[in-house]
Amino acid sequence: MLDLQTTLSHIKLNPQETSESPAVSLNERFCLDLIRRGQKVSRADLTRATGLTAQSISRLVEGLLNKGYLALGETVIHGRGKPTPLYKLKSDAVFSVGLSIMTDALTATLMNFTGTAVAQTTEQLEDLRLESVLDVIERIVHQLTQQHVGDAEKLFGIGVGITGYFINIGRQVNPPDPLNELAFIDLDTIISERLKLPVSVDNDGNVAAIGESLNGVGNKYDTFAYMYFSKGLGGSIVIDRKMCRGAFGNSGEFAAILPAHAHDERPTLELLRQSLVDNGVNIASISDLINQYDPNWPGIDAWVARVRPHLDRIIAAITSVIDPQAIVLGGRIPRALAERLSEEITFDDVVRRGVAKPHPKLVPSDIKGDATSIGAASVLFKTHFFI
Image 1: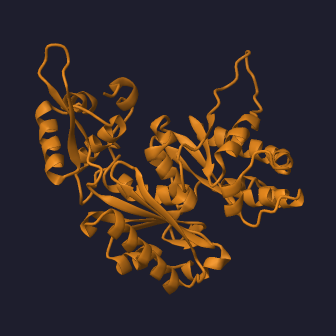
Image 2: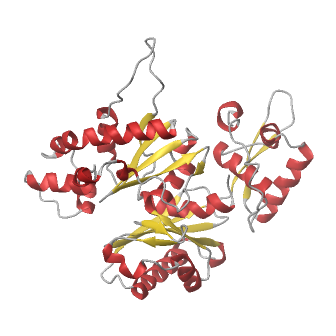
Image 3: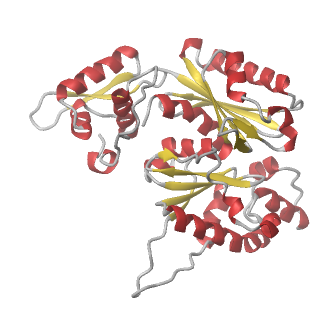
């Protein structure tokens, strides 16, 4: 059973959010989100948490059971009361696929309705032309569906995470040079027409933050900044459990906090790879760095010393502007390295009357696996089923 006071009391409907998903109504989304966070919830729990009448909750729960989104859990008895059934999300109600499109590979994650990654696969991209990438996407989505879902009707949609910044009011992405044919096009529409499914496209930092909000640190903190470490450094901002994309979809470009002359000193995994190579560790790619990571490698200490002043500056800017509860060190960074950085970063406080202002927690990501594809798979669930 969930603790309503600590788990659900801070979840509030956005009064400005009036549109409903084609799958469920706004009140149904609210109930699904409460059940998702509580895992197993009674009707009485939902009544207390929502403020709706018992009759309204009964009607909502029955509707969600009939639609196949909820399942009955075990029955509990409180005191001398009647047995009370608990409700949980039905794991196989719907599925989504998250895609991470990188300059050298594509990673796909199949996620079930409870947020569990059912399967994950990575394929090298030898040909980065648009049609070739679409062929790979279609084949992988078909394979995952056939092998792990069975009923193609249960595949609700596709989320895509891609490196780059957005133009045209957040509709089109400007990715790195190797992905030239994916630049300045409506990639969501193109993939959707190819697969006949809803598709959402966003940059890797944004989708990773959404995944973190649903299935990771977001279960502890409502407001956090997400730092995405990879070949570059980006990220996203989550405020009151809503991702803040900005006017053009480019909020969270944390590396831009540094002046232009410090561009080559950004705390990136590519800079770490170069430091390792300079110290005799043969690491050919960031993927090799992640898969083979050894915290005792020579070159790590030099990298930490080199980037720490810049990280301190970025963290200070995030803290001052956003005032988050937490700053998540995520993306592709190995967890052991994220843990080390969280201990190395310092806050330059101005203490007044012996008291410093509160600091955000510096925490490694709670997501296990490829953060971008897992986050991308979470996007459509967040948009259509949860709050």
